[in-house]
Length: 116
Length: 108
Image (cartoon, rainbow over all chains, first blue to last red):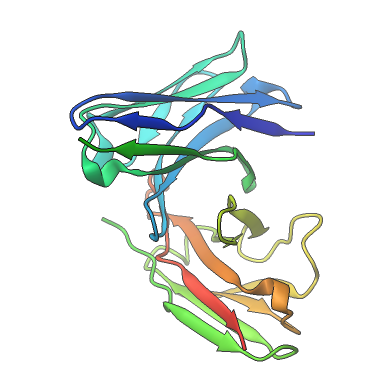
């Protein structure tokens, strides 16, 4: 069965960077892209961007351009999302999800807390 | 930037029909997707490509599209359907994805 397992919770100071991983199993990794979605406490879902696991092409949300980088390691079937210059309003649960006919498979989420 | 508009809340009694709308200028050109999210859980896809239902999703969930509005319909609402529902689609160019603000469904 398809599984996406994310790395554990992180606490970061403002201005720092965070890198969240998403290890995929149960399917051919390079056949699907990975989207990243975040959710601030008590707020709605925000699409951050996506990466093709086939060729590494990316498409980022305009508001995050310049601060976010999405990568994949096909040898370990793992996707990564790095967010730099963290601010307090980046505090959120970050999800990875497999891109197909919609986002049918999601990771469990990673809480990133930005606090001084 | 492109936006999808949903009502903040919808309330229905058990057994009734709930309709949640999502409006956006590009919806005539781009497919819509619907997600259900319960507290503390990851979202679950309940409708894809406007009206298709993934395997395992109950038949009471259906989707439709008309012009710039798509609608998620839940027939015979059950207590377990109480959740937040989000629509998702793309802008007119198809390059940027966006979620609606979410609708809290309350089962009275």
